[in-house]
Amino acid sequence: QVQLVESGGGLVQPGDSLRLSCAASEISFSSYVMGWYRQVPGKAPGLVATISSTGNAQTYPDSVKGRFTISRDNAKQMVYLQMNSLVPEDTAIYLCHARAPWGQMWGQGTQVTVSS
Image (cartoon, rainbow, N blue to C red; front, side):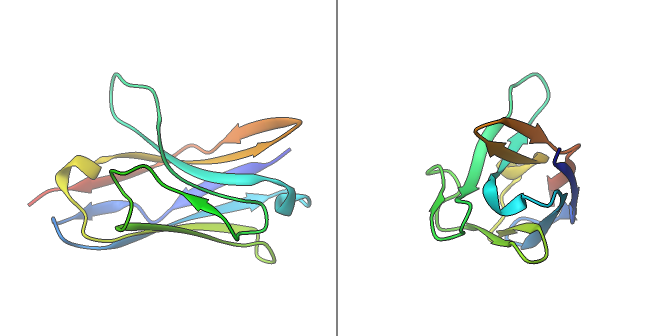
């Protein structure tokens, strides 16, 4: 079963950049569609980005399109989220997600706070 561990969160100012990382432990990592979600208190996780198992297709909601980039390294079993031009509304816990026909897995999350 996939184990996911996020890192890279922190406190940044509006306009700054941040890169999140997600380390996956699972020998069939390359079979999973990977994604990043974010959650604020009292709300369900919302989609931030997804990337196909091969890495050649990504999806983003309009709220982050053009600012965020998801990537993966199947050899290292890593997923990344490059976040640029951050705004206070990006403040949330960012969760790594793995999805395959046989199931899904969530990481514990990493806090991102955008504030001046």
